[in-house]
Length: 66
Image (tube, rainbow, N blue to C red):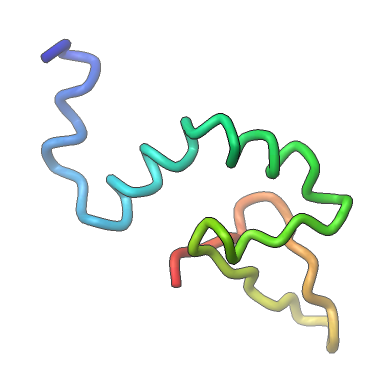
């Protein structure tokens, strides 16, 4: 294993899953199109609601594992 990837040995389940998900070409494509209403539930993610009532769109960095 390359020394550049040794950090994965210390990741918890969610962090390890994120490392794989963020490299998935389909997820990257959906993320690039996020303003067009892409549903991230298909990736096992949900959007955290922002403080404004009724706002459910994802902003960068607010998608978390269910």
